[in-house]
Image 1 (cartoon, rainbow, N blue to C red):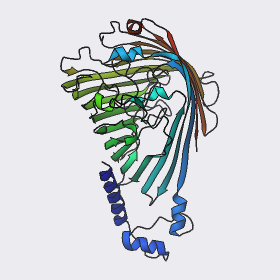
Image 2 (tube, rainbow, N blue to C red):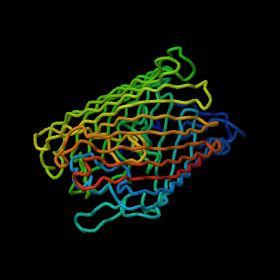
Image 3 (cartoon, one colour):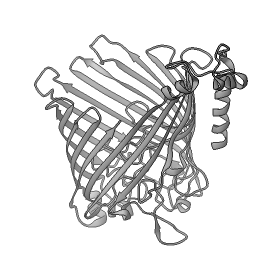
Image 4 (spheres, helix red, strand yellow):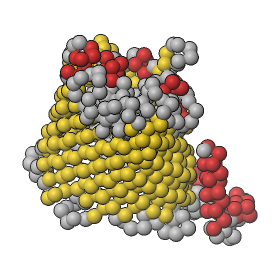
Length: 485
């Protein structure tokens, strides 16, 4: 995959260079050299020299994040998150309760953008992450050595790694077409199925992508990608994805920024990891899965907004662990619906919303059918509560929220959740997973600095009581600061 991306990027540059007209009037030695071999001078922006144009086109940016986190919830989400509601409920549910522990994490991304021509540009960025405190929360288990090991970029790994690195060519052979080759994020819609996982370790892919934006209303992306190696545990292959994602924006005449969005997508994903090869609990080993889905979001009227999304999955997957050698037929689905009432003209602009999310589970692990929904690469923070206890599979989440904007770009709110299993798995015997109450505050302190604070109280339900014999409250508190420049 890496070799293919390198060849693709080289061909992209050569094609773009060959199609451009040379600046035969220039006497700059660098431009003359460029003309002779590639027929592509730098576009003139400043002092008229190629070196000056090159420096003028360079843009640097950065992202610095620091977060203090304290919790007595045993498993806070990792890169893709634990699967408390997955196919091995006993050890997962039994491990949720823990003592209070705290840790400090940071993430730094430094990036640079460089324009070769008006249409051809390059982007690169490097990332460094680390966690100070309870490293054991993030350890993976090595079945060969029999001891825990840490193999994650977001934990105790001070190495600097390549986060992004791609070339982009706008107006690729015709206006409105953009080609991209290299390592980049794949973020679509409300991050219900594809996200950059910004709150945790980030997420990038080695990608070949073709985007069609022939009108202001319609965009269509085709992509083929393999996950960045630093997000994958050891195993025979890395997750891959191929897909189409289209988005249509319709102006319904309800006011500024109150358009109706219609998204349609079709994805094919593979994950050849086996549970015994990567040394972690996984519900979707040896997975080859198709996902077809749609999203409609907008406004019923100027005060009422809505967001509807659904996806169906089919294909083949191994039976859930430990029966990873047998192939099962995938038939899984998920849906969510949210409606909100807004009082934008009232002081503090209050908003009240209600939502329900459903992801199918598998009640019979030996029937040859894999009915558990695979959430793929959705945003794993705050989509089902700020405590981040649950993976979006075999889950029903009823939620309500009220929020205010006390001043400027700030939001203060309360959110409640009731969690149930979609399918009963024995053990436990109960579908009642628990309830959660979240308090949150976000603010743009300056144009570059954002702050988030949250306190989440998760109360375990009867499903936990059936395994652990107790139903304590679990808490999470964090202060999250992000500076972008």
